[in-house]
Image (cartoon, rainbow, N blue to C red; front, side, top):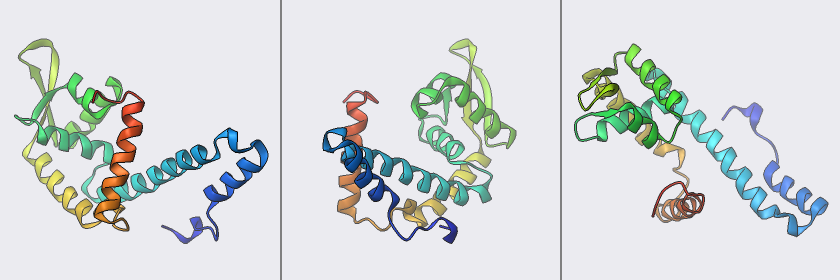
Length: 171
């Protein structure tokens, strides 16, 4: 992280204490601090991922789409499934796939099961760039190398519980 963003104190911890002093414990200072920490970590991770993926011509959103297609049984999915599984609006999914297609990493082909729809299909170039990008993310430990295996499992379990509570998926 660039030095210009480093503070000599934890601003979220300070905000929690000021929050509690102003509105009291009943105003959920612990929840505010946890939520703000999650958002800050998301910014840190996304910034790191995007900088590691940029040399491959990818953003994290495009990388996720390539991995999704590679994980599918035939390397292709209907556009509606791409948006659904990436948990993004259909317009965002279309934009992601169009950008990947312009790079030669995905082909858009007619869906034989739905005459109006299209399939997104990963190309050999898309497979190659996805594999190279994955190696770079794995080497970086997804920027979570400061956590132990047990801590990673605990973090995943806690965040999964929040996602489940929000109705993100069916258990």
